[in-house]
Amino acid sequence: VSTTTSMLSSLVAADRCDRCGAQAYVRVKLESGLDLLFCAHHARAYEPTLRAVAAAIQDESARLLQTAATASPDER
Ligand SMILES: [Zn+2]
Image (cartoon, rainbow, N blue to C red; front, side):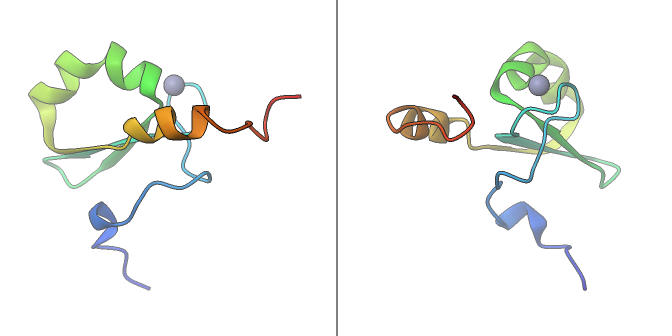
C-alpha cells in the first residue's frame, strides 16, 4: 500500500511525537522525504530548526484548542 500522499492526511491519535511519545500535531516533511512527527510542545521548541530544514510543515496544533474544550479521554 502506497502512502506517498500522507502529507494530505490528517494526523490521528496513533501519530506520536518522535521526541516524547505524546500525540503528534505537527508533521515535518524533510527534503530527504523523511517525515518527522512532533507534539505541539516540541514543534514549538524545534520550530527555528524545523523551518530551516523542512520541505513542508503540516501544523494541526490548532486542533488542540478544539479538543481541549471537550473532556480528554486520556486524563483520569
Ligand atoms: Zn513531544
